[in-house]
Every structure is written in C-alpha cells, then in structure tokens.
Amino acid sequence: MRAERLTVDAPGLRLDRFLALRRPAYSRSHWRFLIEAGAVTVDDRARAADFRLKGGETLRVAALQRDWAEEPDFERWVLHEDRQLLVLDKPAGLLMHPLGTSWLNSPAAALSERQPNLAGILQRARPALAGLSRCGIVHRLDRQTSGALLVAKTAAAQAALLEDFKRRRVSKIYRAIVRGAPGRGGRVEAPIGRKPGHRKVLVTPFGKSAETAFSVLEACPRAALVEARPLTGRTHQIRAHLAFVGHPVAGDVEFDAGGSPRPPRLMLHAYQIALRHPGSGRSVRFRAPLPDDFKSFWSACRSAG
Image (tube, rainbow, N blue to C red):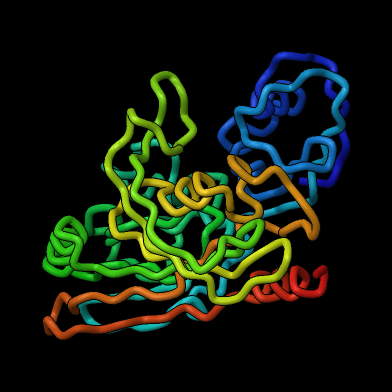
C-alpha cells in the first residue's frame, strides 16, 4: 500500500468504515489492522478504528506493506525451543491469528489471509504445529505489543500450559512507557470489561475483577518507564489500568491523547514470562530484550525533559 493523504468528506462515519468505502480494494478488517499498526493518523493523531469523523479532517496513510511474499526471519524470534515448548519474541504489529474462526477448523485458512499472522507463520516454520489446536498457541499478545510468547509443541504440553494459565501459575512481567510520572507505583484493583454495546475495554462496573501491580523504573517530567505485573489475566488489562490511574501507555489509540515525542506504536513489551516447564515440571523463566523502537522512544522521552 502506498502512502497517501485523504480529506474526510463524509462526516459521521467510523474511521475504518470511511477508509473501506474510499479504498474498497482493502477490507474493513485490513483497515483496522493498519489503524492499529499506527499506519493511519487523523490530523496527525492516532485514533481508534471506531473514531467518529466530523468532516474536514486530514487522514494520512503511511506506506505499510506486509505481504506473505516477504518471509519473516522466524528463527530470529526464537528465544527457546525444545521438544515440548517454543518461546518466541513476537514483533510488534504481528497479528496473532485471523480475525475469523475458519482457521480453527482448517488451520490452512490462516495462510490464505492477506495479513501475515502468527498462526500461519507457525505452520510454515514448524509444519507439525498445524496438527495442534490453535497451532499450539496458548495465550496471546495484542497486535501492537511485542515480547515473550509461549507456543506448545505437543498436545500434552498445550493441555498443561492451558491449565497453568487457568490456575494463574504463569507469571508475566511487562515494560511500558507511560505518559506523565506516576510516582512510586502500587497496585490497581478495578474491574475490566466493556460497557454494553461498546467494544472498548476499560475500567467499568460491568467488568470482571482485575488486579495489576506496577512500579516505576525510571521517570522524566513527561513520561515514565514502568514495570507492570498483571495478577489477573483480563484482556487489555495493563492498558486499561494504567489509563485509569491517569498514565496511559504511550501510543495507545484507545487512551493516549497524544504528546511529544510521538511513539511509533504502542509502547508495551512482554518482558518476562515464568512458568513450570510442561515437560520437566521445573520452574523456568524467559526474557525478551527490549526492542530497538522501544529503547529509542524512551531515549527521546528522556532527551525531551
């Protein structure tokens, strides 16, 4: 897709719908992918796919091309591998699996998607995983979140890992760059969910109980490097809880109102995961190094003062 600029001439439409109508060669789901990947801005600001356009805004679409012909260097993602377990350092921008459900019954459907996705990539890089439910995927990371991700390589390992996730025996640590300086940190205990009729995940009495511990590793006047430990496993939990206390993750299209410097994407990274090995039962821990774009943005925050 080439870079281009569009002027909104149809007020009242959602951002993703407007783009799908103006450029029908790309599906609405593909536009949502591009929006979440940070390739679309509204008057130079990141917006969510369901943002309502008022008319007259300028949309900029960056040149972002992800094509199956461009084979990712999968082996560089591997943090650890043995007969039962594969641990990956997922890059930001990679979709976990197709948005539909057809791939669950026919894994090859993940390979027919226009958008590269981890389920399809796993089938190419490790063909035996096509025989497992969800291609061995036992948990997920948001598309724009980078970092440590577990994949089971056998049915027994998958069952063991899913049970440990269910019983909260898997411990995860994230690194995030947030807006403002949140002090020393602490714990957030607040229900997470969606209000009836809405898609946005946030703190709401309609949600399920959720708890996140966080500490400040380093701070500057307008941003902070935070370590977050989700003590429950709700969708978008860290993002919603940090926004709730007034310090949204930089680059979060749902909560970040913008600021300077501008992040290249959601500044959230799954830094460490600790678990019982599904084969040996031993306690193991894996870390995914902070990616270059994350470190560069933090350096820019520190330089900005």
